[in-house]
Length: 485
Image (cartoon, rainbow, N blue to C red; front, side, top):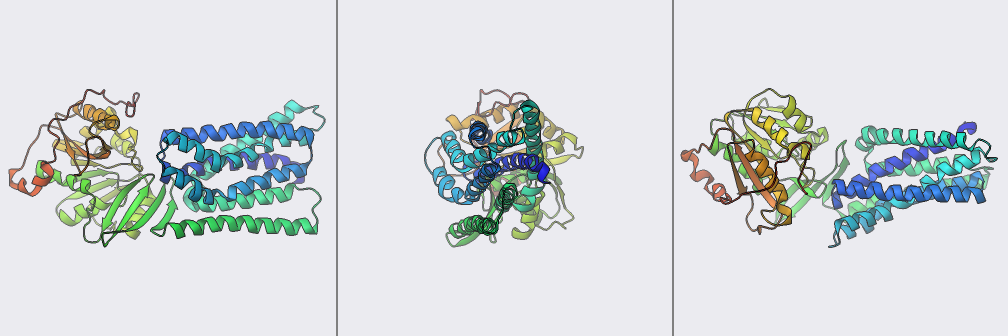
């Protein structure tokens, strides 16, 4: 093993670097979101620090070509990795609450929290090259070999984190694991180990592990309302217990937004969910409903309780969400009128052949809608799955006017290109037109049919229609997603 110690070290450094990059996105998501902008900042800043690490590693290896220096680099990387949970609390969270530009905050958070671990991990590869070929007679061969090991490690780390570690352990436990691995690597690499060095190494491991555990404890002490902080293949998920005017509420938070809020007294504590009941006004002979986006299954559970003669299929991409809904939100998966499909909503729309009377769309990651469900092609498939006179009701987070109105304007144009009639409703009172809010889009396959027999029942909802809404924005397509442009 000693013979290949440098190759193993380069491999592990590459793997850990990529794992930290994926962990970074998860840690930032509840505070800054998980948009392409955040990913761009994370990748850009970490690549910048890696470039600096490669440069410094090469320079230092020319002056101090000793394997113990490599051991120090690894231990320093472990030290900066161990403080990531504390940086989340005392750097990322406070900065996210400021009025600073989001891009600036994302860059600063990425730099201060993840930059230094990336820098010291990047010093490993050039230092291994120098130690492997001190005479530089085969520098090209050795450099290529170490780069290959480092890159393969990065590939393994990417798949290991995405498919296994993140959903199995969660980000905090992954950080703990990385700290231990880096400390062990540092110990194995170090030359001339004696009794005192072994004692110091054990003390260092215990100390750094204690920092990680302390960070976890402080997090839950500071956020006592968070009763679950977990990770799935798709998201970092918080379940929060909220006291709202004496009412105990439970909420699922993914990214910046609450995906579900539930009280024992009122399943539909979010106003926008009540608008899904408008299918009973516009399509009161509905028998089969499809809902894309389950989250805590707030509306499906309510639907099954209220409409005893109707069936609902729910497409929820994340199986962990279904588990959480069962444990915390009273979801009964044994109900014969409920079918659950764990897959991407767009994939289901593309391949399904079952017909529905009504399709409800409430798919979000935080406050960001998956673009693949917003395009002309996706909505065309939605129409394809509707029976004659079927309707689709969609929740949209947007403003009605101003710079944040682009989403609803593009979506309105796209729905108008697919459906004969389209209506827009304000889901909440008390918002100005230029404020972000829940808006409801309803598309009618073959015109609007109203049931006057239940009109009074939904009068409060119907009165919130935006009668004069128009849009000159273009249609969103798969190859031209214009939302946000």
